[in-house]
Amino acid sequence: MPIDARTTSRVRAADELRHAALEQFATVGFAGTSLQHIADEAGYAKSSVLYHFASKEALLEAAIEPAIAGFEDVLEEYLAARGTGRRRALVDRVVDLLLVHREAVHVFLTQGQSLSELPIIARANVAVRRLAAAVCEERESVDDQVRFGIALGGAAFLLTAGRNFADESTQPSDDELRDALRRIIVDILTPARTTSN
Image 1: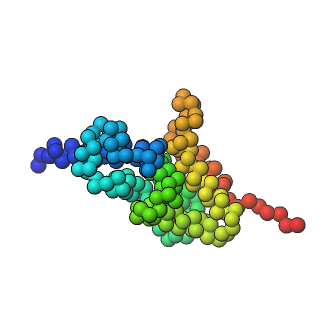
Image 2: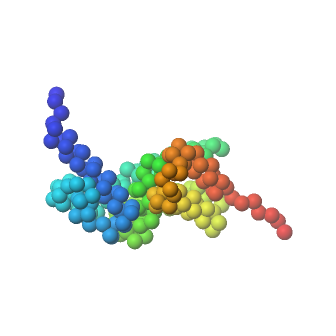
Image 3: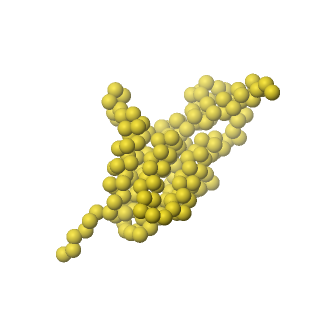
């Protein structure tokens, strides 16, 4: 059966629009991004954006939903796992998700409060809170919550906005970043040893 060229073209256009929107939401912010700006960045007319997505909110949902679903899956696997290696496996999976979905994670972490009335962002906020509670389950101290926030937020910042501060010729590869993030996030999430007085 031959592939319908129009269907392929529509799928490609929707993917290109999602990608352009995600880049704009991550760099300019959701509030600062217009449908016209997304259309211009992707090389389409605004009517094409509206053909594929009913609204800017629908485009946001389409752009970040795969990342949120990934976080929810990782969390469920972590909660179901037993044994000493589960935290390490969680960090490995979260780092992989951050690398694949860096812009989406940056959007819902940095704009989660200001966009919390949007259902997709509310869902992301719940996933992040559940992940934080699971990671800090045994020791829910303020220090542990700060460690989690710095680990997740710092990694998301590094993979998006932070890359703008480095010279392109000295930027590490994704493999180098993956290895470093895995080591450092485990270090950050390890509680500091306290001494008794």
